[in-house]
Image (cartoon, rainbow, N blue to C red; front, top):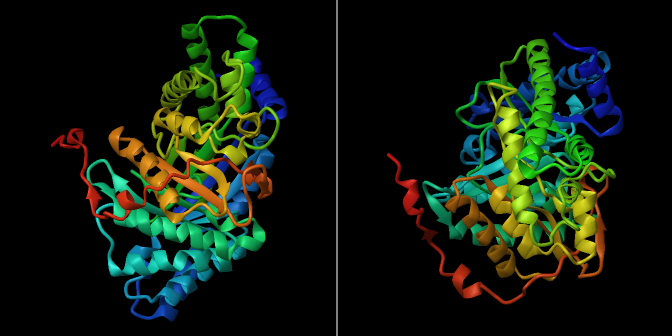
Length: 452
């Protein structure tokens, strides 16, 4: 039974501590849209998305009004387009991206994910054509997000795919240069990509999923930060308990919204992703949580340990609150979307190397990192390879969303607006890994992948 104090506490979390449901994401299978005809394929894709998601935004808004819970985004993810594109040409894949964008606008959603390819063990001709289409597709669309999975712990790392993605990211940055290279903010490179992730830009609807499913992503860095501040000078074991209890309350709210949305939309409930997803709003920051735990500034020595403890406590609290936790589920550290991270970069405390170390213990990876526009393809490939290797070696999801901002250099910043925030251009070690990258082939899977 709900106590009055619990209700008042939740109201305070929403009003004063930026608690929200970050996204309701409807996953939609496109496997039954396959056709030899490009026209028929695009028509089927448009018709299925607009039919399945026609009430998604309305349902989210209704739940918001009825329960007073902010639901920031309503999104759709679809089957990786490389799996349904068949023999489409590069232009054909671009046309599918435009169809996805048209469907997103018709339904009123915020983003649509799934212009994606899974190439962790090799690249088919269809996947190669889709990847070649990504830069132009992201230039021509407003709401489409793209992802490419280049590694898994079981398969190892496809270095040919990483080399291809370095080139793709640079081309995307150039083609969207008139808008701060924003195309790269909608493109992510993965290791061990999950099939039920509700968060963009990496969301896609996996082949093991139902025809249609509802996944919810919760958020609440401000709530956790306030709880830690109220705890005062307790020891770390006590602090972990406070974080666990707070994560439990946040996830229960997500479970409620997911169940309501699934029931009203006539789709099964998939998972709650209990990630702490920050925003540019003051106080809604993972970096500020770490500082409230006792760090002088995020990025200093002790940051990785504090983040590891936070991530573990969040997961332990969350799994008690929902029977179906999935997606990414952890603490996000996207630089441009976290005002505390931005401040730490501007003060020189948080470097790319430190961020990389932090990703070994949290979700998801080097996220929303802006770097000089003249950064070479090979250096970008090296950044991706380093981060992806962390995911493969640790059997976890890692990713890179890096923006080589065209015409910008260290000391500049790029403003994307909204939840994407703004990012200071970070300095890089520019020594070249070109010879290593261009060896090609696959880095073999680690020995601990042999678990059968």
